[in-house]
Length: 215
Image (cartoon, rainbow, N blue to C red; front, side, top):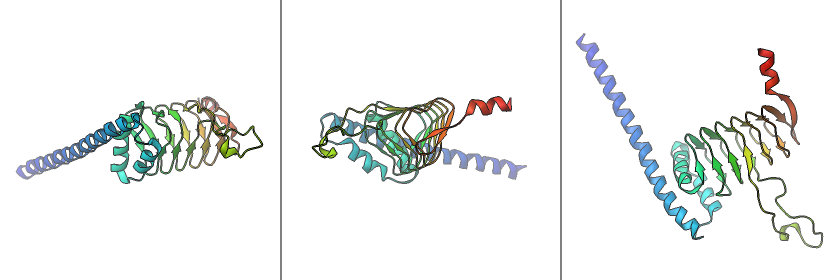
């Protein structure tokens, strides 16, 4: 009986110590990130720092330490960064007006131009989220496209509960609970609960139809 009690106490103590170490580790990253984010925010406001360069640098920090630090720093810079936002290795954000809701998973190598990403979104590896499809002025023929400048960007919205497959390129709004197949190129808005795939992406079926069949 004594051995059993001692084992329970030892296990409880070990678990408590483990939890304490994890909490301390996470809170330390949070403090470091908040400090860096506050300094970076002031420098960005004074235009002494270029946000895309900062994002590119942050994207190279690996492992769980990396995504925890990114979340802490972006929370001080971006307009909105919710809880449980995981931005994995290589994720870069081009525009500091981008926002993140709660419970978001963005896999490695994803490029986010200017987007509002709502709650519970899954984004696969090497996805490209562009702020629309007209990134460059092209109407003049007498000068190169590169010298014609760029129109004002408008954000795209990735709706709540959406899932975007690996290597997709998205240039339009994605409705809530929609699915974009891997490798797709989305040039037109995707309605809620739709499943689209292909280049250009086309409607495969509606998730609501699947649900009604099961009922």
